[in-house]
Structure formats: structure tokens, C-alpha cells
Amino acid sequence: MAHRIEDRAIVAVSGADAHTFLQGLITNDVDAVAPGAPIYAALLTPQGKILFDFLIADDGTGALLLDCWAPARDALIKRLSMYRLRAKVEIGARDDLAAFASWDGSSLPGLVFTDPRLPALGKRSIAPSEDGSAGYLSHRLSLGVPEGRDFGSDKIFALDAGLGELHGVAFDKGCYVGQELTARMKHRGTARKRILVVESTDKSALTVGAELRASGHSIGEIVSVYDSSGFALVRLDRLEEAGATPIDAAGVMVRMTKPDWLSA
Image (cartoon, rainbow, N blue to C red; front, side):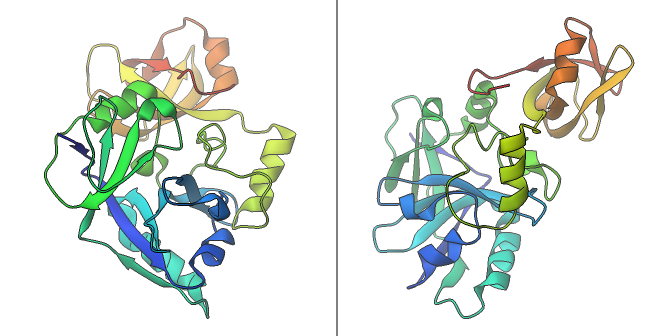
């Protein structure tokens, strides 16, 4: 049975100007999207911080399907609609569709494609809503891939979030919202933070916003929680300086994991 991703929703952007409309807004190259060839991208603030991230797939009829974090769906539609002006596009929720994933050989329904972020994430699909098994969150955490709720809104720079390593930014495309600062961080190498998996050493529950401290120094902050694990935005240089020093998160001892795909 396919693994349905319960916290994802689908937004459709269609019409004669769909590609050019999104091309001027988001971090990746919409011209690269084709049937079976999706992209990962984000819509940023003018200051380069993530508002929304999503996968974009071509449904074969010219419409672009955005696979996004479900609680942010309506806000994403509202934000995109603000930019529509006279563009010939239609933007709306597709409640009849759902997101599915497979990394264990299970078959997938509907529109199937390889996750463009990381091969180990496996296959994704967008298909009519139906029941499916759970398990995707555990798989994603095991690979250290943040998305959706892990970024919050208007808090984390795209490159700090690993969007460069996860193929979510086209550095050779034209202008988009937040492009200037993102390009500057890339060329100056000023992205010193990254989002890493954090786990409590004794399975104690973690708290969003808890400061991470080692040897009395702040090294980061927990940004999302899934019981005793989650993601934290961490200064890599300070984490390296901490070495084997125990890390405290508001009284809970934790360990950090840097995924193999993440460059320093």
C-alpha cells in the first residue's frame, strides 16, 4: 500500500501564464518542469526568508500542481493571488487530490515522479484521495530532510534551510522574490547555519523554541518537534567547537545529527 502523506495538500496553478507567473516569484526554474520532471522550490520574503516550500509537478495538461504543507495551503493561495494582477492564471485548492510517497518498492497511484530533493526520499505521486499507510515522517526524519512546518514562516533563510543542497534554488535564473539576498549569501558564503535533526538522549519530549546550549554558549534553537525528535537551526561553527560537549535544550539533553547530503 502506498504511503499517504497526511500533512500535505495540493494547489493548482493553471492558465496561459502559469509558467511565467511562477517563474518570476519562486526560487527554482519553472521552465525545467515537465511531465515526470518536477522541481522543488520556495516562495520567499523580499529579505530571502522562507514563506512556503513545495514540490511542483506538471499534470500533463499544462496545469502545475504544488504539493505543499497542508496547514499553509490557504495562505499560499492568498499570497500567490496577491501577485496575480493581470496574469492569465487560475489558482485554487485541489481537495480531490492527495500526496503519496514510496521508498520501499510499494506501488503508487496517479502522477508518479522521483522526489527531486534527494534520491533516498524515493518516489512521490499526486493522485485522487484514498487511504494509505503511514511512515513517511519517520523516513524523512531518518534522512534529515526538513520541509513545511520545520521552516515556520518568515524565519529562516533559504540557504540556511538547505534548499541549495536539496536542489530547490536555481542560481542561474532571473529575478524572483528574495533573489538578491539569496544570491549574495551564496556568493559570499555567509550561510553559517543549517537545519539539523535533534533528538533527546532519553526520549524526553522536546519544545519548539528551546535554546540549544553547550558549555554555556548558545549554538541554536529548536524549530519543530515530533515528540522526542525534531529539527533545530544550528550554527555549524559553534556546533563544531562544542565537539563532544553535552548539548542542553531547556533542561533536556539532546544530540544533533548532520545528514550525509548536507555540505558544510
